[in-house]
Structures are given as C-alpha cells and as structure tokens.
Length: 258
Image 1 (tube, one colour):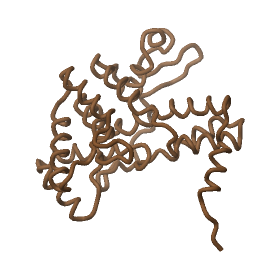
Image 2: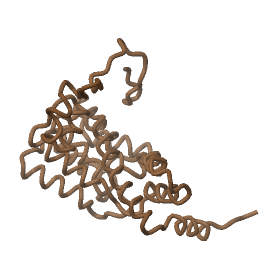
Image 3: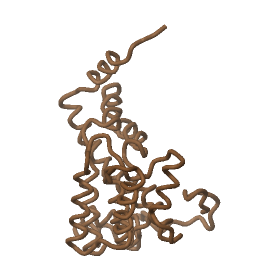
Image 4: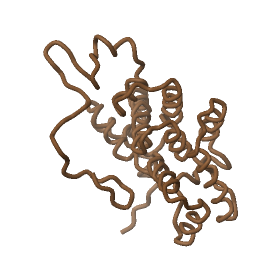
C-alpha cells in the first residue's frame, strides 16, 4: 500500500491472506478466537468492533471512548444522508439494505465530517514538527479550509466536541494529539481573526489517535455510528413515512426554468 498526498492507496499486495475470520463446519474463528465459544456473551459490540478493526481487544479506556464517540456521531437530525435513505425506502419499501447504502454513500466529508482528514493533519503535523499556526496560515492564504473547524449549526462551540474533550481531560486520556487540536483551534482563531467552531470531527480524531487507534479508524467510527442512525430513521420511516413528503418539499423548493 502506497500513500499519495497523505491518502492510502490500495494496490497490489503480497500473499492472498486474511487475518480477520474463517468459517468452518463446526465453528467460526475471528481474529484467533472461537466466536461462539469465547466472544459471544463475553464481549460487547463495541469491544468486538475494536477486535475486528485492530486485531486486539480494547483496554477499558479504549472501550469507553469508542463507546462515547459512537454515541456522539450516530445521529444529527434530518441530514442529507438520512433524507436520502428515507426517500430510497419510500421508493422501494422492500430494500432496507438499499436504503442504508443510499445513506452511507452520501456520508462524505461535507455531511459526516472530516475526521480522517483531521487525523492525518494531526499525524503529519506531529511528524513534521511544524507549528499549527504556520500550517493554518498556509491554508488561509490558499483560501482553503482547516479540517475540523466550522459548523453550519453549532456556534460558537460544538457541544459534542466539548463533551469529548471534557471527558478526555477528566479520565487522563488527553495526550499530544488533543493538545495539538487545541493548538490548531488557537491558530485558526488568530489567523482568521475570529473563533471558528472546533467540531466533533477534530475531537474524534484527536482522542482516537491519543488512545492508539490508527488514523483509518477516524473514518470507520463515524460510518459505523451513522449506520445505526440510518437504521433508526428507516424503522421510523416504516411506521411514520415522510419520504414522499421530503420529495414533495424538494419539488416545491426548486424552481423550474426553461
């Protein structure tokens, strides 16, 4: 696997092997554990997700904060991802999986957050030894945006982000990446000449990295969490349909011009 511009690139690998799971006639083995004989009834789903993702069972702090972050990002109202899922289910009531897929396909950096970009920014800043203010000034000069800052709804602070930082400080989980995130917040305020909301994506990335998670987890966590939110919206859509109402509202909101 090679990296281009900081993004992982999937290419030709070595031997065709997997270290995740194998099913046998009498058992299922997951990461070296017997699924039915060892994992079921012992691990919570959060702990199991950590095992699947990293190959290791989490520490108590890793489990706590993984739970916290999944709760923080799972739901955020009638976002485009949820609207797309509801409208898809309205159009094809028998395709729950298609509706979930429709929502996940729209879970990009604009809607779901920039947590992976934040993680890579923090990692690259630490590795380079550069000051956050220098990096922020370059981004500002290029008319760019610093990932993890700004929010269309939450101003002046993102309550989810503040709670994550509060608990990280209380439990002694705030490390170099959380400190760096706060340094970026100060740098953004100075360079932009006004405070910009440090949103939940930056705090998710910082806490995950301080707890030893790989940067790729910073995107996996919101995707898993938002899947739960999508399923909740779709369960409600079955009982209280609004998909066609949303479609009608779109028709009314957009003018047709010849």
